Image 1 (tube, rainbow over the protein chains, first blue to last red):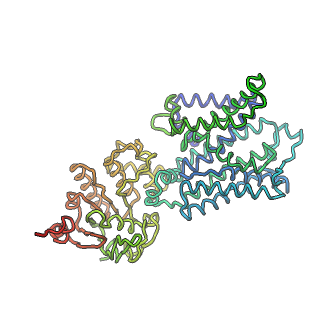
Image 2: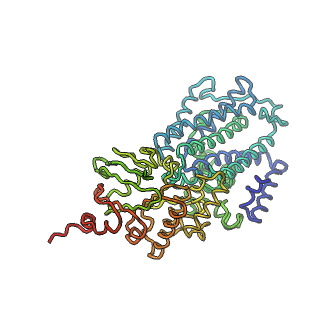
Image 3: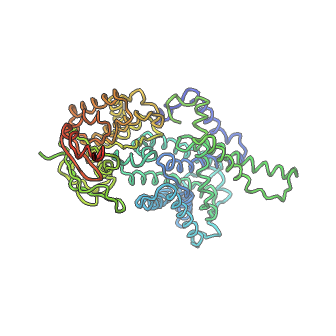
Length: 348
Length: 241
């Protein structure tokens, strides 16, 4: 009960009502949503999980990562490989997969922090590692190399619920990723209110002052990287068994890393609910743009031969530019304030 | 009697520029000492050497007899030295209460315990009415007070104060002086301050060390220092006829 109270305490009555209604709608979504809606909703929660993981590093601890695709990809490939090679069910495989993602995160963190590579240079280091691993996987035959790594799925696998092997109906994936994303939210809320959270925010706002107050910068930054890469690794395991196909060019693409940042930037870096809120805006909007173009092509309003694949990214970029210019703290704090969703003085 | 802080022959240069040259002085336990000197004399550099930001080229820093030279700032804090920054460094996106809570967590077992302790320090520094504000929105005098509250909340044996009175009104300066004096009397805190506000220096310190061009040029009781020709010369220049 204490955990629930911790979670609800910052919300106003209006916030609690809206939250409850949203939760019910999302829980009942499989009963009226089409399979297309389900796919989009699953993607939203998946990106919300990755986004929260990224936000923990930059928003909480002040560490900019533009290589989060690496941790997701490592979790995905490791669990998929263990499943194919030795039949280890992902429910167990998640442990070594996440451990590997954390280990790589710690390696990057140690190199960065030990040699005092800060800010944008640390970000470059994360990009470099992500690209490095992409190229390595591209050339490893037992990981499928450029041809991709595939998990076997039979028609029977698409029904029922087999959580241990992550095989089942689309609804299972939806509820699972929803639980994971909301679980990450609860975890972040707990961490932010703990000693760790206080230290992280202090380091984020002023490392030198934080150090003078007795905070070991290396240690607490390493904690942030470990927890963040672990969360991303969990998302990766889900991704592998939801998609059933992994290509290094897609999984480790820097576009995935940037995608991980967008929801948080739009929703509000450093806020708890911002990454989820931002993803809920961006992903459906991107789908709307893509579908809209298809429809316009279908009606021959625009020539069907026109290549407009990048339009979704263009729209997203435009939104990010607007946000950075006019609402640099993100939309969520503003929405919270306008709709009075949080109690005065409480953080979203 | 072993002094609480002992600075022994500390030298520090930056790219060939000698910022500190063989500086030695002591601060006795429960004492209030001041470090004064013109701008660029090396006062803040010396603070940073004591606080672990810079490792001295030569010399040593001892706290209660233990050699703490070259330790990291967080280790220096654990050893019992709290410091403020001349250019204030609030955690801007955190509230005033959270700022001090971070520091109080140093000696507390839980966040709740640290928060309660932090409230006490806010009251002491007359910041309690600002507890819920973001530190970014504070006025400069309030930020200075926040620096002091934060340094105190780590529970130090020695408090290093770098120009915390600058920008305070005379009445506020007097209140800060009274607060620091009371802290020393009640908790046995030792204080070393860098200060330009002579009103505060004269009211507070029992002993003054004067730095000029990185060297110690005078040392002693306040009444003696203000009459020392060498000190007057460094502040006012040569008085040639």
